[in-house]
Image (cartoon, rainbow, N blue to C red; front, top):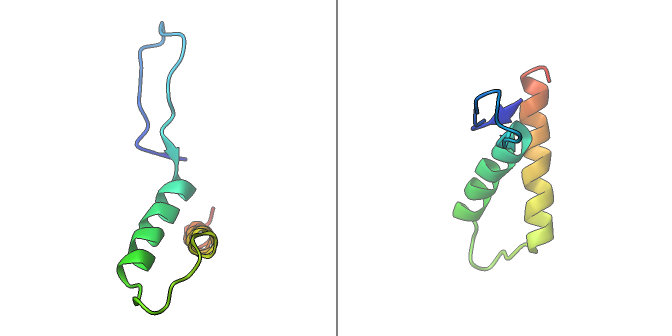
Length: 65
């Protein structure tokens, strides 16, 4: 399933499916993680990305996907 899919007429050669729902959930989780960050607790960006996708995976699992 994709977030924000774009629908084009059948006679068009290509189209964009939008971002995956997993990517959308991860982006929303990242926003929350960054908003709640304490200035003296600086996590590496790689760690924040991993936490974001782990949260997205848990959300998809809760949806039964």
